[in-house]
Amino acid sequence: MSTHDITLLTSIVEHHESSGTPGIQVTSYSMSGEPHAAAIVDAVTADYHRVTGRPRVTDKHLAELDDQRVTLLRVGKNMLGAGALVASPGTILRGSGLALRPKGKQRHGYRIEAGSVLDLEPGYAGVEVLRRRVAAVWATLPQLTELTQERLARLPSSGGDCSLAVFGTWQLPDVTSAGAIWLLRSYLRGDIAEGLLVVRPEHGVSEHGSILGQELLHFGGEIVGAPVIPWRAALAMADDDYVTVLARFARSQP
Image 1 (spheres, rainbow, N blue to C red):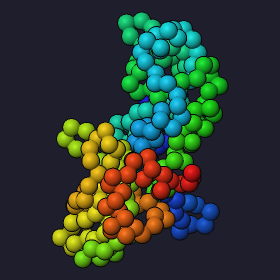
Image 2 (image 1 turned 90 degrees about the vertical axis):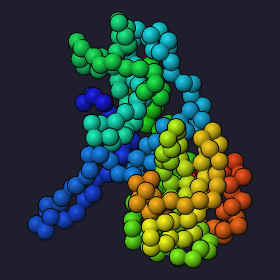
Image 3 (image 1 turned 135 degrees about the vertical axis):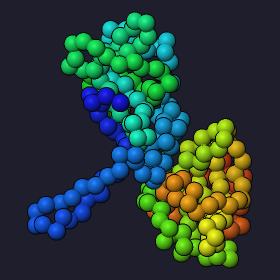
Image 4 (image 1 turned 30 degrees about the vertical axis):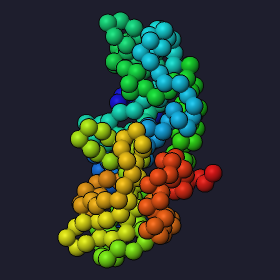
């Protein structure tokens, strides 16, 4: 990511607290990002084209814009792994490869590839258009907060209804599935949580299972305001359409 980029969504979360000195506030954050914020960045990236209906950007398309001013919507990570969606105004350059010369720079640019570009707008004035599109996708997702060990420990140890919903990115050996949902019904003090995992159909099958609590803490974040779901109803959701299940937890209900 470039210093000329405009951040539209990031997994870095700022925490504000009093310094103990009147008029002075302390701001802290982790440069590697936080799981609940990373889950949103991943899911917005995964759902962007489905929700907005925008065409996917190709290297051919970018090459055809040689020497033209554009604003790109790019997905990237910093050196410590924090993800972000950024708007990048600049001029497309085509040489031995594709590059973007940032707005205001007379020389030099950096390499770009279509695989890291979600969308584009002609000219330098596309930032707000792209910001609105990102916000529209974000609105179809749950509101998240940090999942804590204390919250896990409040689950019953002997099953019951699903009283905790966690949204995140499911990592498997051969696939990474953004926007997965764990509906949890129990937590054993041996660090085993049990429930239903809902995943996109192209990445696997939604099914009953278990997960280590420590793994769950890095998976994503707790869905704010999630309803308690009876276990039988949760099991039935394994056969429901993924988008239909996701809509039940969205910040903006359809």
